[in-house]
Amino acid sequence: MTASSAGRRRNAHPIVVWTLVILASVLLLVSILTTWVNRQMLDNSSWQKASADLIQDQAIQDALSIYLVNQLYANVDVAGTLEQQLPANTKKLAGPVSAALRQPATSAVGFLLGTPRFQRLWINSSTVAHEKLVNVLENKTGYGISTGNGAVTVNLGELVAELGAQLGLPGKALAKLPPSTGVITVMRSDQLSAAQTGVRLIHVLSVWLLVLVLALYGVAIYLARGGRRETLRNIGWAFILVGLVTLVVRRAVGSYALDALTPPAYRVAGNHVWLIGSEILGQIGRAIVLYGLVILLGAILAGPTRAAVSVRGAIAPTLVRRPGVTWSVVGGVFLLLVLWGGTHALRTWWGVLLLAGLMAVGVEALRRQAAAELAALPAGAAAGGGMAASIRSLTGRAHERRPEAGNGAAAPATAASTADEIARLSELHDRGAITDEEFTLAKRRLLA
Image 1 (cartoon, rainbow, N blue to C red):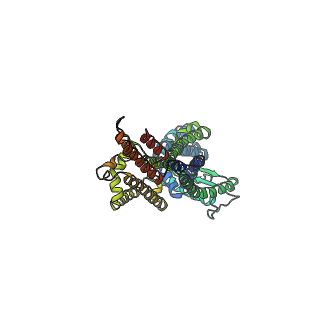
Image 2 (image 1 turned 120 degrees about the horizontal axis):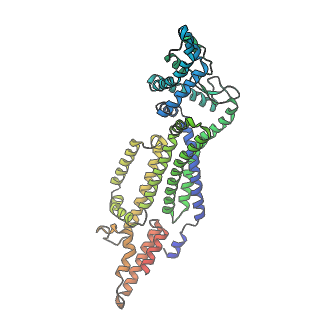
């Protein structure tokens, strides 16, 4: 293979490749957001876990205590009820006593919300409301609600009634609580149709957007002939960038929404609600950063740096000549990763299969690269430890053998040796073991 033919193998689609990588990265960010909504907002088990985390948070307990006490005082004549219970000569104290009881009542509610009984009431109320909401959004039957009438609510009325009983209010007064006491409207009937359309779209996008993203990255790598390692490296950086953007968006959007929608008195609690409700989004962002680091390290390992060449030189004999050992080690690492289950993908069947496929492709590509580098070494070099220098030996041997000026007798041998080395480099380049830049640099050194 000549240098001119090697040059013709250069990536002929650099703009297309970059366009595909950028487009896939943008779609990856959108896919992350839709996946978060699908997993966090529409999955009942995730919602139940989030509800448990919410009620166990101290700031949220404090805010909820204030809300429940306000609901009780707004719907029950606490002063009048106390007046009926007090002796005749102290009935005038009912008003001041009622006002004075508000703060102790709030503290008492905070204590009660920390008990398992009250936390279970909260979790059940929230879970039922969420199941109702998902049924409505997915246009399923149940709960007597359909598009065009009704509303989706969180009913904390049982908590308000329980609070009144704990404060000693008579049952007759609590029985008069309006049905709307402690009811938080999540969605009105006029919002359901648009929300249902959005949920259907999220269900589709959360699955197929990820497939499209992986396909676009795959096409970019395929088209980047002669520069596939660099493209893979760029994809790794793209993953890291998208993951970091996801984490920043989680913080920035939460702060903006709190400033715009939450009263100052509830801002701390609102911040805790957002962080708990967007925890899966944070998990996805951190996982994407981790995947990007793995991809980047793989691209670096296949590159021309001194450290990468040394590592490949150390493991090449095992990779090439002992495939059984290689695949046993890879299989062990794979099983450890699956048992670890550090990301959501590693806890799903499709994620495990995808990881297995990517690991197999990556290891096989590394084996082929190591085999090509071994084959390009002079006879006996690999056995004598020459592989530890790998590409460096190919790019430097002819220069080291060149005789001093004036020794004309060795010139033909040197020229022949240089031609052999260029031929070996061309073979490596043709097999994809070295990139265009590496080939050009090595050839320049040989001809220097």
